Amino acid sequence: MGDLLTVGIADMKIGVGDDILITYALGSCIGTCLYDSTKKIIGLSHILLADSKVCSNDNNIYKFANTAIKELVRQMVIHGANTSRLVAKIAGGANMFKNSTLKIGENNTRAVINELKELGIEIFASDIGEDYGRTMECHASDGKVLIKSINKENLIL
Amino acid sequence: MSASNIEELSNFQLDALREIGNIGAGNAATALATLLSDRVNMSVPILNIIDIKDVAHILGGPENPVVGILMTMSRDINGIIMLVFEEKFLNVVIRTLLNKDIDGLNNLSELDRSVFMEVGNIMASNYLNALSQMTGLEIQITPPDLCADMAGAIMSVPASIFGMTGDKVLIIQEDFIGEERITSHLIMIPNLKSLNTILKKLGA
Image 1 (cartoon, each protein chain N blue to C red):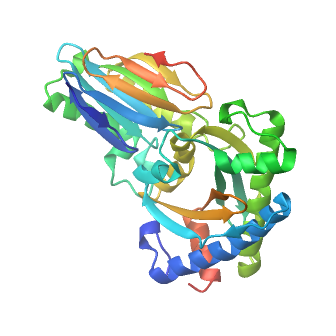
Image 2: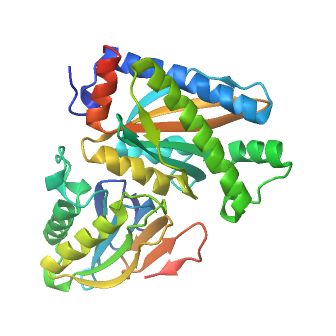
């Protein structure tokens, strides 16, 4: 039996074998799941913000798209993953309040997509935007990602 | 002394914030009591400074369904103010005002939503009136915006605003106690410049 590992806000975890990584209630945040299907190594990052350079406090590299995803790749490679085999599944980036001028979800989405493009990692599937929260569950055994929301049917990426 | 993030606030400054929280929440409780034609008592407000990664846990767990009412503050103070209501609170409000029960948070009618936005608006306005009177600062708020969803997803909004300047979130938690004990959370997030403006006006 693998472990169930919870990824908090501004956090990341790596799983192997039968491990399951879960991050709860993504709102404007983004969950980025990377998977090496040959080695069955899975990684999940939960970022809060797009860019560390525009924030006065940038000491948690797991918090920002521009620093977290590079770090996730680096740690997965240490665990034996091969960068060229990694594929991404992303979820979140919602705009929770419709009239809000805070475009945090959109900014985060753009930043994560750019970052993955720069790293040369293909986005295999995504469930992004709109106005609802998502829980994301990532399975190391087959790379399956399950998305759960309050008002919607479960979705498999 | 100006703080450059929440973690740097002194005990004296925290006490000053707790005190405005107390007076503001008193006003909000009075407004709620008027609205519900009920005696509403309130607990001593708890000023929580918590890690961003733990914010959803104070609201019954990240997947607990709640309603958040968001308003944006402008003029002398910039930032957001948000009220978070759990289902029990919303049911008391709807039962009192409309004499019916709500059918789960994912089935809110337009009327339910309007009522909750108005309650949020009244409580936030009363809270900010107290702050305004104490500090002489002029504060304007936008019309309320509502989101019914998982607590964690709603809290990602204030978390991301606090996240730009630190790893902690400042939350004023208030229990309003009428016939039943109903809890609501008022989260006021002035930007750092505005927080320092408030503290300066309070002499802290």
